[in-house]
Image (tube, rainbow, N blue to C red):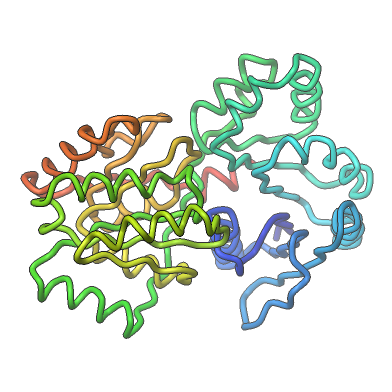
Length: 347
């Protein structure tokens, strides 16, 4: 039986990375792996029983990294699978971690950041070279989209060691009376649920969706907008969003839904809109499609083939996509490749 350590955030707080790590740990444990999650970001205890262990070693600066490295050295896993979004920081901290954990474990890295490719290209040639030299020390690299793989391969990483695996594993659905009431009310009013989600930050473009509904009153009559926020909040931006959303007759903002609750709500939606100005491989997009929900997304990165794309800078483009969604028939659900098997192939 292989022993695997997953190094990265664990919910709470809920986020794309942390939810993926939780689902991956559950899948590993159910498939016979000895799995342990080490969270270097938080020091809060994790409650509840599970089939794998979670240890939080969060602290200031490099202290948490040193704690994580020493713990991994003690565990002596066969595989250490690191999940990173902020590569600019990790590329300097990672070598220290490697010194602490030794050479016995196979090292696998998943790069979650939707901004990675652009940020990498914007760096100086020295920083790009330093990053590539560090990434070559991993036995396996997992990119969440093809843009990441293309950039890494063009700058010297062996493309045969880069797997493209969307950071999506199926969700456990959790129903709640509050959400059921929200869904029932929309149905009673004859409205379809239009769901969007993400951090409470401007890059997610919630104002674009609100603007489209305000411009086209017929769309506002057809849809009830539900904005689901989690993890990080820019209160100034959200204040402006609330001012705009109050001009709609029927819209709601929800904060901090558990992953299972969001999955329940998403499964009841007619349309999911992703209005981001950058992206990785958005878990919510794949989740929406798995429930048979129409997906409308910005064209800022390569999207799955089932997405209807719109120009983020053209509100009319989103309006057209929303109008079309009302006329179109059923959604073609993608038979998602077995992402779990693709991940463990790197082990």
